[in-house]
Image (cartoon, rainbow, N blue to C red; front, top):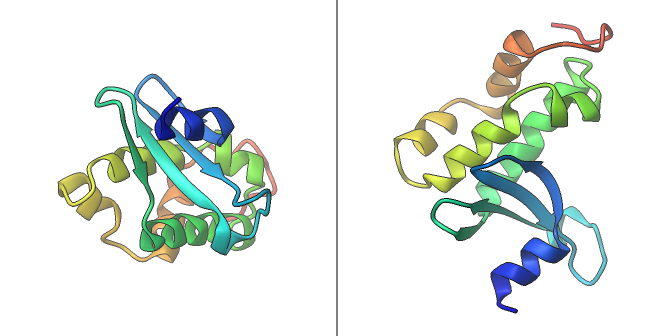
Amino acid sequence: MNKTDAILNKGQKLYEDDAYILLWTKFFGLSLLALTSYYVYDRQKQRLIKLISREKTYLMSISYYLTHDYGFSPKMVLESISLFKDFSIAVADRGGETWKSFFAETAKDKARTYAVRGIRKDKKAKI
């Protein structure tokens, strides 16, 4: 079993579709943010991409703003908006136009964008 297979087998999936998998792994079973690694697996290119700290921080910040500023539940962030799909596509194109476009605005502005256009199944969400 190679490194990619090991990570795909032991990682916790946050998002998965026919093209990408976004997952995270714990370091020796510790789920401390600083010791947690996040990956995007590009199925078409069969390539595992480890998130750099800027990408990880950006994703965590958007999730934070969605839950704390806009009232989205963690489940809504995972299932009801396209954040993780869009993020996976951007990371798979690291350095390209999709990546540059995705990371162009601040995390707070990006969260607002998702909150405004998101499918809000939870009536407690606020804009």
